[in-house]
Image (cartoon, rainbow, N blue to C red; front, top):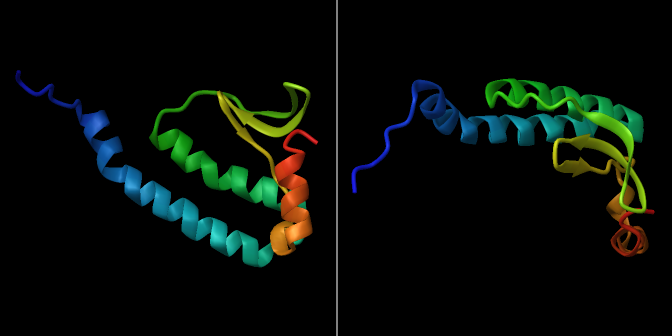
Length: 105
C-alpha cells in the first residue's frame, strides 16, 4: 500500500513538534524560577502555549475557571484541562497526596 504524502503544513508541523515541546519545557523551567503565585504561573504558561497553538493551527478559545465534572478547572483548551497550582505546591508529600486525592477540589 503506498504511503500517503504529507502536505507542506503537516510536514512542517511534524518536523517542528519536537522543537515546540522543547521550547515549552525550557520556557516552563524559566517561568518556574521567576513566578511566585498561581496567577503568575497561569498567565505565563498560557503565553507559552500561544506559539504552539498557532503553529499547530489549534483554533479553540480557552475557557478559564470553567465548571467541569464536579469542580472548576483553571483552564480548558478544547478537551485539554489544565489545573494550575502555586509554585512549589508539590514540595511536600502532604500536598502531593492532597492534590492526588482531591483532583477537582
